[in-house]
Image 1 (cartoon, rainbow, N blue to C red):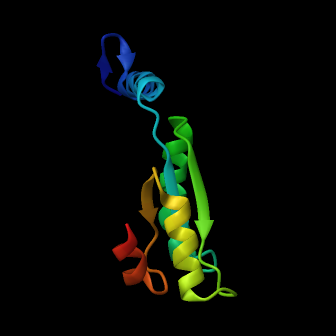
Image 2 (image 1 turned 120 degrees about the vertical axis):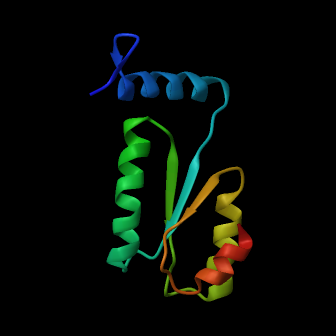
Image 3 (image 1 turned 60 degrees about the horizontal axis):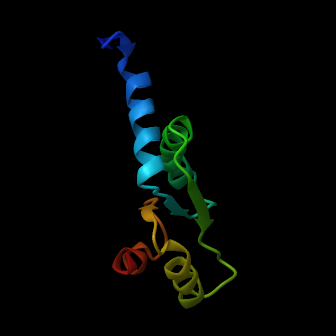
Length: 100
């Protein structure tokens, strides 16, 4: 592992990210289709990284019980003021991409 100023790079990055988050808070909104393993697999490593750097995030899922419009409305409402990560492939993904 490469060292920078006597600290492992990962630890140094973690410290810098946490310091930056104190001054400029950010959050992520992770949206996926819960039933699709490929969507969940895509987000698994992202969530692990966000957790390790203590970056807040919210998860939400496409509901097959609701209409496309209801899902889109929920997506738009909950994604405001967050960085959006849309797990793909997903049903109707082109509609969600247009809303980002």
